[in-house]
Length: 378
Ligand code: NAD
Image (cartoon, rainbow, N blue to C red; front, side, top):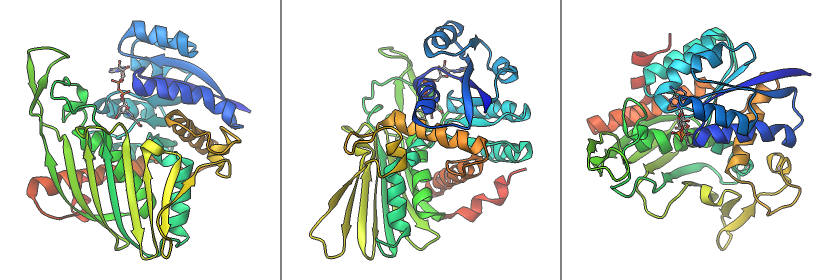
């Protein structure tokens, strides 16, 4: 069995989640490689050093380019703000190394197209952190849809809301810069767009409305200096799927009470299926003729669940989804798996987000074919 040297860039919320996943995946699964936590990099060299020793990485780099060039590093995991994904992933691909990049892939369709083209040219495995799709209960949802238990799918109602920016005094961060991130649509909505595609296939047209509610925020917590905010706080859209199904989409980081409300209701001619990430171990299903919804609870009959617990109802959490995502990545590196969002699929999420922005700007329906040629890869 070969070794795989992991190089992790970034030590924030997602840096820690990746480190936990890389540490846990060998305990949960039999892997085709022995994982070695080779190196970690962060813009803050003291933090890089402290996290490397706390999380078990062999060495720390103060410059991310040094981590990419490090011969001990075989796989590059990128957990930095969105605008840094492009230069970091491009450099990793130029070095011929596989890339596991946080979502969204990039801050523009042009960047995402170029990354996809570079990944194809490099011929390496790529994955993007759309971890919610790795929930075993989402696999159950797909099976229910594909088996026809809901009949012909008529509608998708999806929402991803949180409230971490609901207070107007919540300060500016990199998430508030269009050039660095792209607002609630990029931050939260990209997950929901990926999920909609994963469950119901291609979306061919969108119509949308974007709203910036708080046009200024303090530069830092408690500061009197105000910064202008140009990105969306809230986005609403209508979706037309290629299958003929219709849908609604919304993303907001202002919706009081919600902490991780990635949710959907999918209804067909024979039934309705509903999911909420805040109750990530269950689905609600109502089929024609039943008096109401039944609750389907995740258990060890789902292989991804069984990897962590033999007991039903004991529940998986967010970090287990990340571990399942890393497992699929490792299997793909061994040529044994296709699951997970690669750069080609992440590019389609970017195309959708771009179409939604264009539809909102021009206040009209936009067909996805309109954002094809102009931004073609290569
Ligand atoms: P964060 O601000 O908590 O962490 C960012 C990290 O990047 C920090 O450690 C920072 O020091 C480091 N960094 C910044 N510039 C750097 C540079 N030039 N070189 C090296 N390191 C640098 O952000 P976060 O919440 O962890 O988000 C990071 C990424 O993860 C974003 O793309 C975000 O969209 C994504 N994210 C994904 C999920 C998910 O569920 N998949 C959840 C949250 C965030």
